[in-house]
Amino acid sequence: MKKIVMTMVALLTMTAAVAQNSDNNNNGRQRREFKKPTPEEMTNRMADQLKLDDKQKTKVLELNKEYEGVLGGPGMGRGLGRGQGGPGGPGGFQGGQQGQRPQLTEEQRAEMRKQMEQRMEQRQEYEKKLKDILTDDQYKTYQEQQQQRRGRGGFGGPRGRRPNM
Image (tube, rainbow, N blue to C red; front, side, top):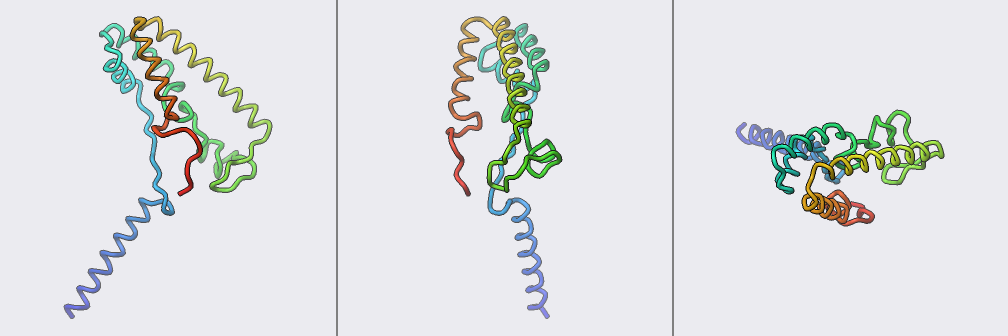
């Protein structure tokens, strides 16, 4: 009887461990979630790195809140994941399979170009307003930091095609 109980406990433990592992693992691929920083987090980081005074910090926080959709991580706040026109979501791309680049229609390409141009214009407006707030040395440091971020592809890794895992 004791052996049966111990066997059942072992099986339940192993089942729970396997189920937990499969929840954390997408078909053997680990997915890193990108948490977009809040305007407050961005401002605090900029204040530390650029040595902003209180007046500058207040102005930069207002600016970061105003341009929140333009700033941040991948896609600058506008991803094309599920449910947003990406593969598998409503209004998804034409063709394509998982693991392959989706085929875009001319209409979708034109819309993407238009959105990119708008974001670039907004980013330039942000940069101009930021330059008015910062000193010349602070703005130079800011530009150097931005260049370093771009140099590593914006995701913390080298540019180029990701290896298949």
